[in-house]
Structures are given as C-alpha cells and as structure tokens.
Image (cartoon, rainbow, N blue to C red):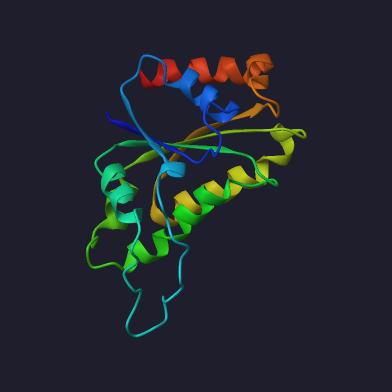
Length: 179
C-alpha cells in the first residue's frame, strides 16, 4: 500500500507537520507540501458550455502525484476552525478535475482510496475542529474516498504538540496501522 501526505501547513516544522511526522515515522510516504506549489484559485465554470479553462499553475502536477497512491493523509493546521487556505484551495480545484478531460477517471480513481486527516490547532481543537472533520467527510463522500480516521492535536505555539499525549498516542496507533 502506498501513501501520500498532502501537507497544507504554511509553517515548516509546525505542530501539524510534527504530528504527521510522528504518525508516518518509519513508513515510506510521499510528502507533498502544498506551500511549495503555486495553486491558482478555482474559477467556477461548472455550468459554462466551455467548461473550466486551463490554469497555468502546479495543480495538475500534484494530482498526478497523488493519483497512484492508495492512502492519502490530509495534514492541515486548523485555521479559523477549518482547514488551511492552501488545502481548501487545492480541494476546491477538484471541481475542475472532475470535468477535466485530462482526468476522465478522477472520481473512480479517488474512490479506490482511503483517507486520513491529521489536524492541529489551539482553542479547544478536539471540539472546535470537529466541523472541519465533518467537512472532510462530506468531501470524501462526494468523490467516494473511504474516510478511515482522523487525529486532532492541541498545539498553538511551536512544538506545543509534543505536550498532547493523546494525539501522540493516536499518531502512534495510526503508524502501527499503516506499517
């Protein structure tokens, strides 16, 4: 089973990246740091006869990297009670890919995958992060991805995630499941 981590963090070595690293320690996983790519926002052309227009950015190269994998881990800090902007921007573009003739089997290929979400935030994230988890569930349901689980960690300041023993334990359990 092959794994791709789609990292929506904007801070290198942030709490979310640290928790994700803990979960995939010793596992061969392809890391995709969205912050390293230019992903243009969607221009919604779903109802236009001409469909979506080609965007001059890195989005398709990311899709090409995730499609071969069986397991996707969406790793995002919790920003304003939701996923990071770059993660949302990436997922918004799926609307384009669902209609893109370059990816005629996008939904079918995505439906063959399992997904996990790893998220870290402050301000009572185990409660206030749940609407974001629900949002991911709806997204995964729409394209047919099996939602296999999630971890929400508590951390705001650098390295604070290391004090969240419950999240570290859950990451260790995920790591064992993926090994």
